[in-house]
Amino acid sequence: MAFLCRRAASLLKPSGAAPALLSAARLYSSGAQYEYILVEKRGEKKDVGFIQLNRPKALNALCDGLMKEVGEALNAFEADGDVGAIVITGSDRAFAAGADIKEMQNRTFQECYSGNFLAHWDRVSTVKKPVIAAVNGFALGGGCELAMMCDIIYAGEKAQFGQPEILLGTIPGSGGTQRLTRAVGKSLTMEMVLTGNRIDAQEAKQSGLVSKVYPVDQVVSEAIKCGEKIAANSKIVSAMAKEAVNAAFELSLTEGNRLEKRLFHSTFATDDRKEGMTAFVEKRKASFQDK
Ligand code: CO8
Image 1 (cartoon, rainbow, N blue to C red):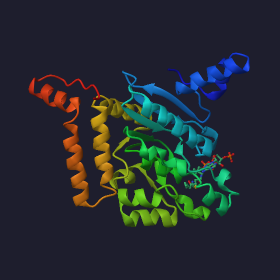
Image 2: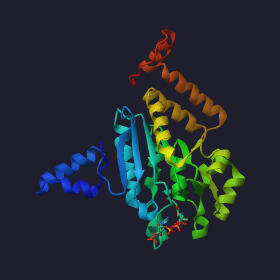
Image 3: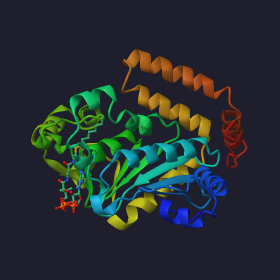
Image 4: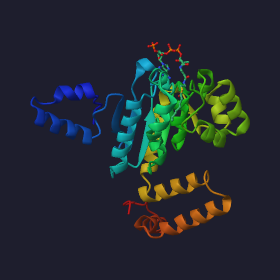
């Protein structure tokens, strides 16, 4: 499927309200019509959902519309039985330079609180399928938070991570203080959150924020390869594995181990567990049916 932005899609609409609506609905349901993001399926088997943030002039600042579209694309990939993993990336210059400051500048407390401002951002962290962030350039504020909502972060050599909200007179609001602390510990998080200092890709790797660092032009392809590897496994069992790892951030060791054991037991209710073990015994490659 080729990239298709909303403007290009509108050129394809036939004239007349009803057909135009129908056409738009079809394009939308294929996940192809967006204004702020580019969406397609990647990988040899087209089993990796790919979302590229596409507001280059604003360094991919995360405006409300962009995050709504990310949510829609994630919903489409979540519902697509062929997709086994999702990659989110930006441009070489910026993964995302944070929430859109121009959009937030004149907001009042009442508007933020009553409207639960940016609550829908959390969609990234509730997706069942594994999500990989491929980060080049700036991942600042909400950009760093968006990367941390993903399950795996790959970084390009020139990536920079930071929570500079303090310099704007505010604090992280989408998990920065919580996920960064769990990823890199208290001292480095405090330093970043209280000074606005950024860390580079190497420091992010050393501190455990990212799992791999690649040359800038290889980050996306490596993330897709990782996605393909994940997509080759049982989707239902991958979702259980993801649920179990994420529980480590929420539960005590005893509760977490109990949940892990129950999920492990649950894999025995799937055909894929039987197939995986049978394939091993029969010395052949497993063919998972996601059942
Ligand atoms: N919002 C809006 N526009 C932005 C943003 C942003 N976060 N970042 C960059 N831009 C725009 C600039 O305004 C500029 O636009 P224009 O050309 O129209 O003036 C364009 O992008 C290019 O930026 P620069 O000219 O500044 O480029 P530089 O290379 O000089 O600098 C930086 C790049 C260092 C990334 C710089 O742009 C910068 O510091 N940006 C802001 C980074 C920041 O503070 N991010 C945190 C934002 S607050 C936040 O994310 C809170 C999240 C809370 C979530 C709450 C959920 C409930």
